[in-house]
Image (cartoon, rainbow, N blue to C red):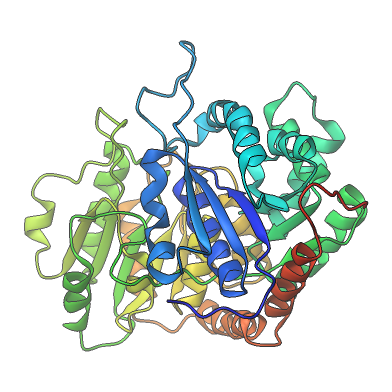
Length: 444
């Protein structure tokens, strides 16, 4: 089990948002808090409980407590299908937020009957619009955890808080973020410090902002981080071990939210085959898809056998990106994936599709020059021949972006080492939480 630094064992309630790109870094944040001696209760529903397995395998049951509540029954007008508790379509975010807000009363009841109630609630940024009210009713503080980096969040806050309507769900989210007692980022000040100061000065008007990243993904004892896939981890590692040349394999993965059309899948398959490079292709499987989404072209896997590996469903991405044989990563450039790519020492080939992807590409490709844009747009069909050329070049030619990415990785590693900016920020966050007491709100 993980060793903990001495602490007063202050109790914190956390409420993740049930989507892979949100709940996984939330677990990584909780891991860091547990390692610093806090006690954490984590709100989950039955179908998100498995995300806690890595934490439960590493930490004492006296410090980490699942609070399993039934997923609130959706109204007849809700587009969330019955039985679905994990968001796989970003357009449903407002409906998940609305459904989860119905946990308000059960959480109040739980708090009021707890022998040692939490001193604060730490929620995903998307939930701040109602968790602020929950915290206020319990007379404790709310902290928002942002899975967006400050360079992305600042223009979003500018847009919605300066020009948005309070009737707009996105505006309410950003109003909730601004009203939170504290704000936590999975980034580091050397990368995002300027935007953090702008957020402080223009929108939240206090200094309780912590950049504590990059959060390293949990490496659990004998459990999978996100769920089962079509291939076990050891088989994937053995396949990669068979390639003697370092940085020769391309990894392709678009996270848990993206579905590709038949034309996009055909173009991507053609590019991989035409490029001649060895590859791993993580294909997202979404039960609610239907039609021709995410379907690997017939006969493709047989034609590339030995040269390419197709993994359907959950993929141990960190294991792949950290392997010496992997040299480049074709990604949608969600922030978690981008950070894992940088920390995995691979060349980022970016295809932004939606939400924050475009802002991340602007930062990484245009401003920092550590990534190469290869395509853009959720419905865009790439030119297979041109993409094949880029894929082949990414593992055969020295790229200036790779050298710059190496320097960014060194800066990130320095931030999370003992005494680094993110390490100090985590210690400061724990110190602030340890100074709180249940039922006693501290003035701003």
